Length: 130
Image (tube, rainbow, N blue to C red; front, side, top):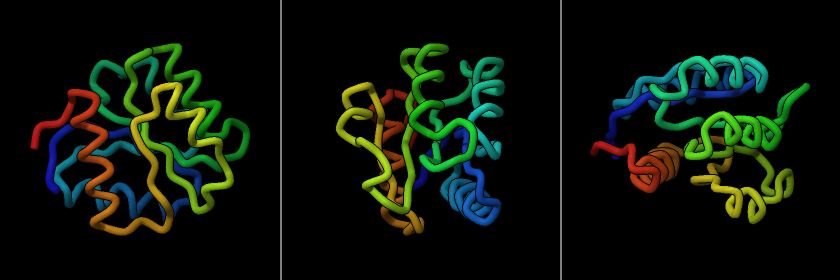
């Protein structure tokens, strides 16, 4: 599923960050990447009006994805975020969904599932332009 929009990728592992940015680019999205939650908060604070979705790794040093999501929600209560993790047990997905999380992607990224989850999250948030 191809789409349009600007996506902030927050991923501390360089390989996963490059894969996510490359996949998003092939799908038509404009992806910008940072390698930790603090950088994500700083960038989001400045540019949240131009960011349509945030793809958040859950396991990161200093500020994990769950903590980062909570701060992003304080900046913009309508933030559309998708959490990604290699282990579902790393997070309380139900709690995050109740807090407004737009989706979840299992690592390693699978092209079709990755594409579908991003597109559905963008449509749910009203940002999608397929």
